[in-house]
Length: 279
Image (cartoon, rainbow, N blue to C red; front, side, top):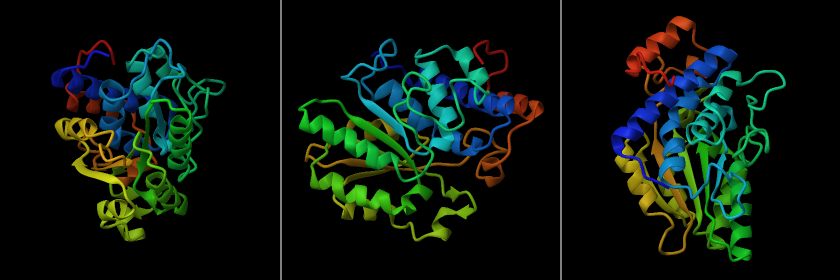
């Protein structure tokens, strides 16, 4: 895999954000802000972390990726399309009746989609199962899981968090998209989330706390995975819901609404993509 430069990554991230906004507009779908908060984590996973051949997305030796916060699946579809797994034009048919890009993902709906997610709390346990299978079979593929912060209020997450260190699943990476919101309010007000890093560390994980929109910090955390001491790794990534578009940032109304055509074009200007033929 050719590693893109930081300017190339920046352009891809801006294009991805605009494409996701366009998808929400065309499909009249919700959860746009949740998709925008994890764009950097998901995109850089596919460009700089995962051993993954776009031409053979089901290769048995591939690294696995699970977007546990399945309501943000437009980000996953966009990342796969920009990596060449399927045509970019398919994204214009997101959430269409009879289409292969549903609003909540299911395995096999599109190349590269590993699992059905959206019922929160399931992605990490499934990822652990994949990582354990690799260890038992003496295979070296790695498993990455992106989770929401509100999802970390599920008991299944903490049962999984106990299991992974017990079995030395060093090829497992969890990333928490800590955007501070969930459906009805601030995640830290609804449940006692803090100190989130200390919670994971107390369960035996190697933990890195970063700015989830700082490319150097994301890549730096990736470079420390797998953990040399045999522990599973978690990245607590502080993010902003609606990141990249000023009138969407940290506004939970964009958990529910989709943009108008005028708002799409306003976002295009903010993302400095006026005249870009790709999006």
